[in-house]
Length: 324
Ligand code: DGY
Image (cartoon, rainbow, N blue to C red; front, top):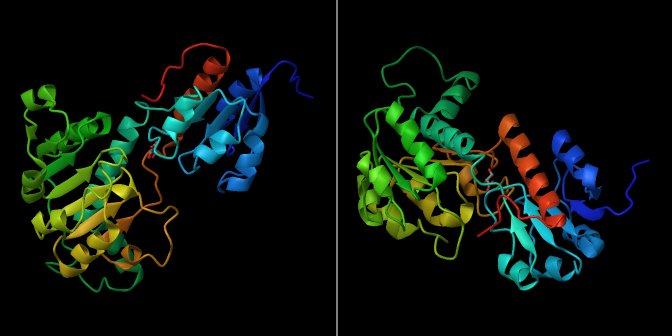
């Protein structure tokens, strides 16, 4: 039996990769919600945090003021994600609870996926794959499953943080023209030929518009009817950020009316997305189940970083990645 004497209690909301789990167990008394693919019910979460000093969570767990109030001994919340919009950070700060996350480590993996969505939407990969199995492939035909070129196209990046900058590197390799819109001007990127455009200009100019902003009050429904109306009819929207950044009803209308050509979506306003969601039934939508950072290497690293910061804070040391 594991010796738990003197160890701090930690609740982990999902089964996590082995190395991270072992690391946590060396210095903490861990309880788990022992499912890999199922969210912890809120009632279980409220009960489990009652005596916990640490809460190790996922981006799909809602860590609101009620959870924080139910955890009088809580010292640290470590989320295995870069985004922390699922945590009431203000409520945690009032209780002097440290919140940590996993920035940096998932940058390249998430940009890979955003670029994969550019490729899948522009070259109609999913539709074309289905066409084989639907028996639509009768012969080679000049415009059968013809998409649009990526090389030479204009990529508009909204939010030029770490992942946005990783998109610039990929776009260069594909010979794209790249512009960005961000609250903060990025002179280093501009010096390397990435042009800054005000949001409306970027929307009008870009062939692909890729979102890389966090979910905040300011970015909520940043892309809605007004914005779709400015886009080219050939434009493609890529969202690997958060569902709340896009007005999904307006997106549906824009896709159906031909106001824009396609969308690649890894995130939705409500996750998991309901199978009846109208966006899932459009041929010009490529939908993925929030797998931006889902490579084995990256998910293992995220799990370890969250475990390290949990252990550090519980031992009275500063974490590597506090939420700021
Ligand atoms: C995050 O960590 O916030 C990402 O959305 C995971 O893919």
